[in-house]
Length: 126
Image (cartoon, rainbow, N blue to C red; front, side, top):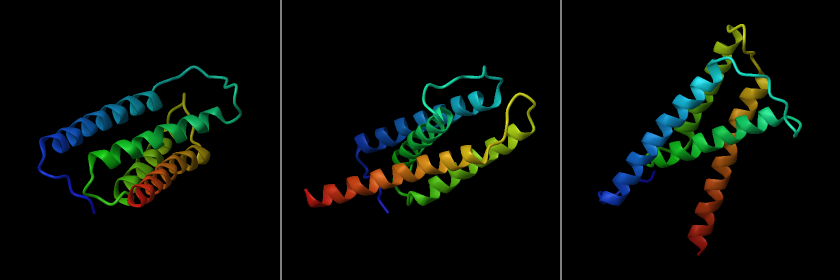
């Protein structure tokens, strides 16, 4: 587990990351729970790519927000968040539930985990 040192720069970075994390989750929650126009994507499965990208960013913000935790802890919380959002959407007449959205959310979190691991490997080598 990493710990943030007592340096002001580290503490400030964690605080900024936490603020961005809360804002991103708040914005995403609002977007996922209000009626949206049906979008046609030029890329097949564009909606799933957007889910994966959003959760990649959530994973990154969570990692920087909670450096003392192993990544699996916030990633599991975010996977639960994505699942809860989909369950809530099931009960909304203007939204729909999708297991593929949940899979894309988890895929985005996993992609960030892989990227972060590769960065650590290359940092140790260099």
